[in-house]
Amino acid sequence: MCYFIRYMEPQSENGQNGPQQNFDASQAVSNGAPRTLIGELGKHIGKTVSISGWVDVRRDQGKMVFFDFRDRSGLVQGVVLPASAAIEIAKEIRNEYAVRIEGIVNKRPEKNAQADRQNGDIELEITAIEVLSPSDTLPFDISGDTSGIDENVRAEYRYLDLRSKRMQKNIKIRSEFVRRCREFLFSKQFTEIETPLLTESTPEGSRDFVVPSRLNPGKFYALPQSPQQYKQLLMTAGFERYFQTARAIRDEDLRADRGFEHTQIDLEMSFVEMEDVMNLVEEMITTTVEAMGYTIKQKPFPRISYKDAMEKYGADKFDMRTPEDKEKGILAYAWVVNFPFFEKTDDGKWTFTHNPFSMPIPEHVDWLLEGKNIGDILTTQYDIVCNGYESGGGSIRAHKPEILEAVYKVMGFSKEDLEERIGHMLKAFRYGTPPHGGLALGVERNIMNLTGETMLREVQAFPMTRGGKTAVMNAPKPLDEKQLKELGLKIDKK
Ligand code: ASP
Image (cartoon, rainbow, N blue to C red; front, top):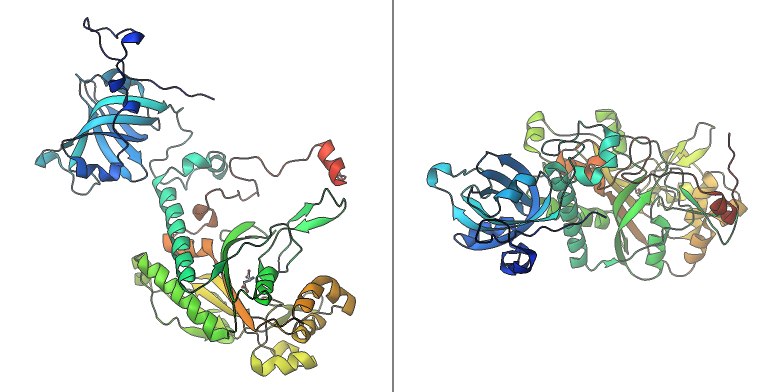
């Protein structure tokens, strides 16, 4: 590890650096004033302060050296005057060094003030600089938009990419969105509960990522495509209102708005009908995004049937914004309802369109139980679309064993298959499971809409590359022989 601290050494009388034993601790920035955030400097005009952060820009003008310093709260310009004890070290430090600075907060003369910049009316007259951690020259420029940089290079140095203004903003917007949704749900008496990551396959229409079990060689866990079954079991368990910020892990083809991992604001409620869940989610979204300063095109969110959406837009996700709306960053939400429950697979079998655990609309429950008009059965599924993305979806669930059984029967499962797949759910449903329903909001797609990003990876801290390689770290990679043996695995070298 490379870590060094340089203190400003006091000058001895002959102008040479004084010997170490004469070192005056009061000059060491690290012993000085407590840290002031750059965003708060305006409150300290005329005072000596200490700030910590990064060198954003350094402009060496020969006699004087100018800097912009950056911390989590913003930027400030600093200057090292020729007579300053810090002038020598100022010449050495470079962009992206982590530093601690001591200086006097000076008001800039009126003519030098920059009204359009944060701290544009002040300047830090630097008296001491402490290098907390130096930086090699960065592999790419982070002062502007990094989206044009080679994806693999950005991924390798993601921690530097994340320093850029745009990425800082995206990740902070994400954090605020999740925080506000969470606060809203707490205000509505939801309980936050985590569900397992090592679990059994839950179908969401994707491939599973699997994890071999050392204790049970030849057996595998599946990573959850969603917490669907566990959240329903929490309704059986009497929690009535559950949510979590859940990871959903799906082995699907990577696309601009799809990754192997995404995050959901996942919720489930007992004793509810479609309206209850939809109204609550609509209120959560409205409260959250309006508090963040966004404008919603239409409230309440318009509702459109799947059939009408297909006729009007040719897709079940669509963009209702005018070019002007787009310019203004307006959010156009809509609900899509009345989806068909089943669709035909390529080999002529029936499969679910959204979620096998859903309830058909009340008028079609009998059809399902009788196994007739299968293609016409509509589900209680409700999808939320925004600016062209499907940004969430949910349904009222089948909470009676015979309804869930009927769904699996339509899909051609034998009694044994059914027992093997969902026996635990059928069993739980025999113990007073309340009627329930819920929804999951895709965090990334929502943040893409808030930030105007068109790639999922621009709103995740450590996304994978298009080739499925992890950011910074080097996965996937082979296991060594010992691990393979322990897990009872043999690799087919072909
Ligand atoms: N589990 C569903 C999904 O991941 C969401 C839900 O129906 O609550 O899409």
